[in-house]
View 1 (spheres, rainbow, N blue to C red):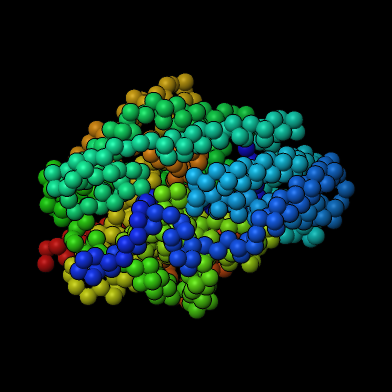
View 2 (tube, rainbow, N blue to C red):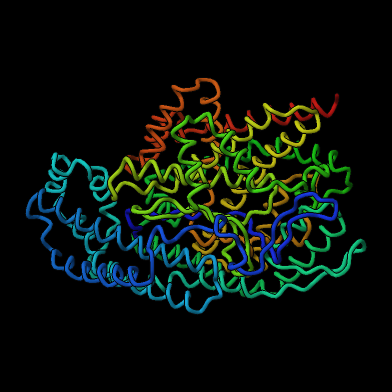
Length: 629
């Protein structure tokens, strides 16, 4: 299916859940405030959705309005060939409709994401879904009709000054013309969209509904386990707790592995089917074509990361030494290196660290960051019914909104910088671009965010005073490489393999997928860590596999961000101005590879991956040097 011009961005991270209120420990140390109900959370830590709609009545009014406008818009069908000025008018009307559509849809979604079990809000989002389908049915003809224009006329439109703001949009329609189907087929595919989304919806509900049993550890009483607090246990300093939580979690997932396998298999089959219907050689080509990214970039990433695996294996050996465990297991990967790793950082302190750490961007940037914190663009704390992870979202006519599940860890501070990187790119892009080119493509989506993580890290490391602080920070950075450059590429390779298996007619049952995943895990992590049999079913918990060929972009974006961050640190203001102008404000106005090249990095080559591996090597060498002192 073709994507809307304005793409919503959802960036997921590890999810956590907090259950009840608490402010200090018995010795007076500050701890993470915990909330059972949303109504318990102080308003300054919840996002202000009244900025979108002040009340239900105003939302209802826009729902009716946008449906009526799309009904009227349908009458323009078949008239695009009249003149450039006529097409300009139609594109402007389309933009008006879709801006309102996005605003209505996002408002309903944001409300549900902080109270997912609320039946009234579920009905609310059902209404938004119905509205969206009506609008899409009455506006989707625009893509087909533009593609159906004679090539000569379309070229004339592309070069007409009246349509200069839409030049790249029209060029993209010309480029993908051969993959646009006849009108009736496009309409039919649109009607299948809800069916195609069933695997993802099923995964989401299954993940939510699985009951995890409590587990016992020698050093503690029976501990409750759920999909949120699992990550907390994985960061415990108690190895027995980590081991038992790991085993209980994955043994439970394995009980549902056949259902997860059918769900993921359904996603893969749909992806392959749509690619074939649109005359692409495979699903990778179809997915990457939406951003005009050559397939060689995907394959090149995997090959380049394979060449860097000895570095990851070397890091695993150092980590084993640091943790003083033998053998080292998968459940040891996120163990704290010191008690300081578990110290709680208040949200107010995290806010200060983020603003200070990103001050290199300049006053205008930090002024907007301060506004985001102070004017409730951010939803901070967890409840049981809140959407897991972290993301940034918003419509063209709203400020960005950021969802967090803040627990007060150093990782959470990095997540704030990450999501605000998305928010700032959205903020600047919408100021600079018209609606149709304001949605930056997914290939660019993770660069500004991971740059913020890198800049924050460098600022924090520069301020570190002790050897212990430096070792902890170096380990944090190396973990960033492990979880983003290496781990996301591992996911991407797994996704590529299972799509190829299905295309070749091979079965994608649970056993087959687990065997593939376990072998990849052994290959990536090497001999210094035990690839426990439980990890074979990790594929069952990865939500990004339901967003076709998305995860590779975390790795490519990470590599690009390493390169661009180094340019900022070395050049200062010239690099900041270049990146701001060519990346933060470009949106989808040009080919993403061109945008990045103008910003200072060429992702059509393996150079950025090699530079990232060099930075990984340098960071690891610095850690090894400190450990010898």
